Image 1: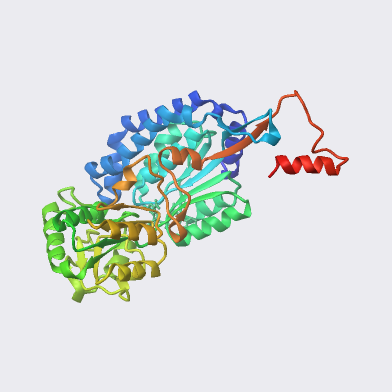
Image 2: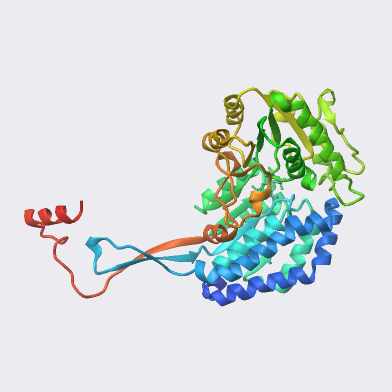
Length: 454
Ligand code: NAD
């Protein structure tokens, strides 16, 4: 079927108002969970084929997050979708005001490859909870996960409601030529700009979940061992192919050497190898070459350029890195951790602010004034104090970027809001209708109006 036909049929289905029924949304969300649960083995197998991602990491960083989103939405959607009362001013009394959350309509979700299930299905879940129909275009890069999602969803859902379309640039470009009611994109900054421009032609609203260089700042008063442990985990999870991984660490110069030893210790303790399922492959040769090209051997503290045949780069820490080094030019998106040092917090903040607004920022400190200064002066999507990555798991926190790292957000209730238009209504009874605002105007009417509308 042609893409335009699929979208036309989804729009026709949306116009039947079926998706506006909350029980329909809950039923479909529960169905999705049941399908995923039933086919977990296939989900694990596909992602392992794509980049040897283990069952442990697939469950903890993908499936559990999807299940949580479904559970929260099924529990709360009735409340989220309720009409909300608003106060009414004197000029409109005896009327009442309210806001109705209304589904946008037919949605296009475009996924990224690094967490292929979660980054495709969580936006789709939010869209379904909000009462929309969904066309999902997962990333073509992990081909097995893309095909598995297409099989599971297309065999179990009516394509008028939820349809997976597989493909790469050609297919996505074709989809972008069609008018959707909202586009939700996760991916790189350059492609984000292509999506935004294509959406503008149809005045389609977008949510763009993009990337960037997320800093970690470490001051000298921290618990160095625990700081290194949390940073190593956040960085080398999924072999560093995480949009909110700490891209680089700026450490206060006085503790640099102790910190480096602690990082080394925790990398060794974690026993990062693909063979033992503690680590994942680099997604493809293109990314392997890109990453290997960032590693300057004379700055390597631990690690190396890896094994291209196996598509594995070990956790690689670079020390004495400067902002002018190659590894600091673009988002790393792989298992390379540059360590830079700073003398004053003012200097560290200034350096971070010279780069684009990051998706995440992490500050490790026991100093309250420094914590407040970092949170106040650096603009970033979201982040953590004394931890990495875990803010992503809090459904009470909106997840999204700012500036070059993105537009809009989702997770939990924020996902529902992302796919809802908040329709505002003033409702009046036929009780009275004072003549004050009607012509013919007069100085007396104006005098009274000036008293009322101030
Ligand atoms: P990407 O931009 O290359 O691809 C993302 C999607 O866009 C894919 O589905 C792809 O098929 C499609 N696409 C690629 N080129 C296109 C084109 N020219 N026209 C139309 N569509 C096109 O990104 P990626 O390599 O999959 O992911 C890596 C990037 O995504 C990193 O920058 C990372 O930080 C970011 N990311 C952000 C988040 C987030 O939640 N903010 C999550 C994961 C990844």
